[in-house]
Image (cartoon, rainbow, N blue to C red; front, top):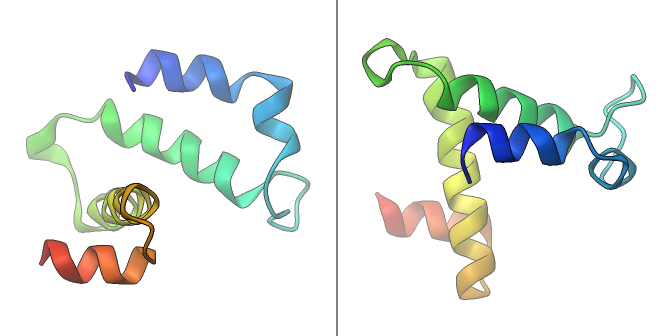
Length: 79
């Protein structure tokens, strides 16, 4: 999903209603989505180690859902 598409979806009420509350009224997943948009807009050469970790989590989660396994298992398969 392109950053603009993701950003548009994150602006919807549906995206704000789902997920576990992070403690400040915003869901953990919504916060993560906003961070991913920011990272995707960063020049690849400028991405820091702190930015690679959330992206690896997203890849692991996506692969696990596609394969029916757990995110941790999917990440182990990647490495």
